[in-house]
Image 1 (cartoon, chains in turn brown, cyan):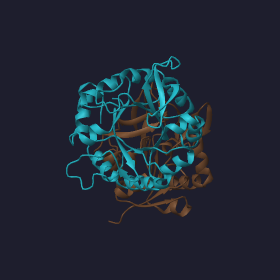
Image 2 (image 1 turned 135 degrees about the horizontal axis):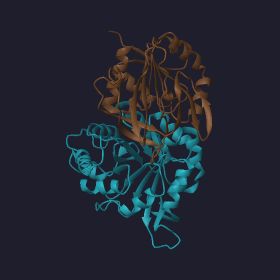
Image 3 (image 1 turned 30 degrees about the vertical axis):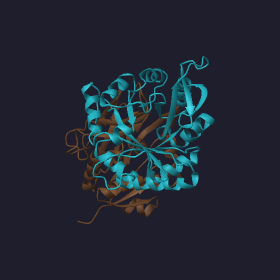
Image 4 (image 1 turned 90 degrees about the vertical axis):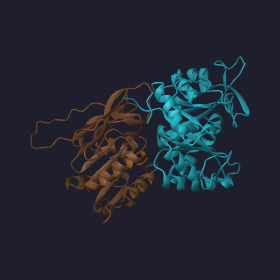
Length: 211
Length: 256
């Protein structure tokens, strides 16, 4: 079987080399790019992100990626967001009292974690839902988190019975927060699978297996 | 469940080679930082820290190569310190494949550099490396004084006040190294850990003095979120990371 092709979205976000290498090690053929054709044509799009929510949203706008991410999702083409690349798919982020609109695929606000020690930095457990594809076989592993903000309330409207609701994975640091979402073609993770050793490698292989 | 206590081996790297020696059986090249990082990764290290002790900036280029090669081989967080003076240095390290940078003397000289770096890259990329020693100087309120240049130079400044200021300016973690305890193998300076823990809410990494697995749980009980050590891992038995984690787990703290 031919290797799956993955584009790691290149918009000037921190350490993307690790994401590229981890995906390659998991068996993907990887491109680091922000060109529309590379965003659209790959089997999977990986959206990294470190730093501030507002800065990441601005950088996504600056490289013109938002439209193409949206087009992929509308076309049922897989996207995986990580860390701030996970957070931007919610309604909004609040940092230092400033509200920044997100891509609003899901309801929820990314807010400062209500925990005694912040940033939440290190290896933590997660609670994936039954039937999770990403966490299959690694439900009890620890993954590497590094973040100060998270979505701590989930009020998804399930009134529309024909829609399959997103599968939500929770973790806890001081308070429960959303560690991952699997929603058809769009998946997002608050932790860093590319920094989570063997468990992270297995998760990336699980994702590649869905493409 | 809670976030696991991190166990972090630290490697001193000079011009691309590990210095101070490392004693591992069956290792092809004991001076190669990439091989050692792989070894520690396989042994269960939660992160790896490189401290670049290269004296000349001309030779520092090799550090970026080492970081790049390490990032090719291991998929756990990598922190690099030594020679970080400005946001540009952090940018280069991140581009090479580091996840975090640590800063020491340059931040003492010019604290604003913390704001500059963290506003650009976020708090999570910057670790304040704080070398402190006990002092009888009455001007140092906590009794713990900030030192620079690897502990050789006293500053007359209070380490607890500096930790608080650095956290307010945006560092995401504090690596607290006791100059007095460093190298003694008698255990961590618990009083120093407690004093800094009480002053900051960012994660605290304890360093200096570890000589045996049983030295680690008291540092965690004193408030450390992570523990960093060098020689106990370099010269101890090959399963020392596991021994340390077993000791931490037996004391009732979570480990990976």
